[in-house]
Length: 331
Image (cartoon, rainbow, N blue to C red; front, side, top):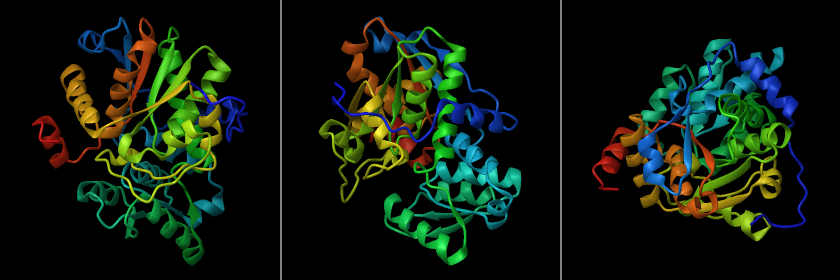
């Protein structure tokens, strides 16, 4: 149940989302929204499941929308200066992809133990990688320092209106592809997908309810939402590194706090099972963050029985070793 008496202070408007879509459309085509009878049968409760395949984006993640939204809105001076951001992979690939298209230098701060495959993907797109910090949140502090040292423009993965507006274009597409929806379920790390969905739903389809899912080992936002106050933790413990954050964020939390219809957590075991189910039902690859909405829907089934529900399969960027462990049930 939504905490009572809390007013929204949205960082973006529906006009911002439309503007972002106008800017990024020359570079991206809409991703499919698909139904799978097997997935409906597995979920049960007469729920119609609609899968938004953001795992089919050029970088394997919805965050290419965010990167293009930010880069296409830069001033001439900021394009010359270049961007810096902290990332574990998807945000960095999105920015690097956009930077390569539009000749904007991109510097990415990655945690020291980041997955080598993800580092290689970002470097292949032309980004400069700088090791820094033990996790995403400490890497963010290093990125902020580089804005002063090198004069770069910071592109935070959540605390940036361009990022939030870019993520909102997912829900714009979903509602064009399927108007008859009752709910949308998204994974939350920083919350850009959920904020975008809330802002778009309020304007275009107010009856559409937005539900959020977070890993139980990285549940700062979930716990903050239920407590009605912002919390931060010292560490995270989840293999779903796309949502492995340990705090909330200034631009996203107020909208999440007021606009979500519900918020659940899922274990790593539940996320791993959702990856296996999606692999079997959709014949596509997804990462932990991408599978979290299905894991969350399994918990939300009694509340969403008989409804038409969209799941955002947000990314495919799982490293080979982890995917092998998941599919062999070693994880």
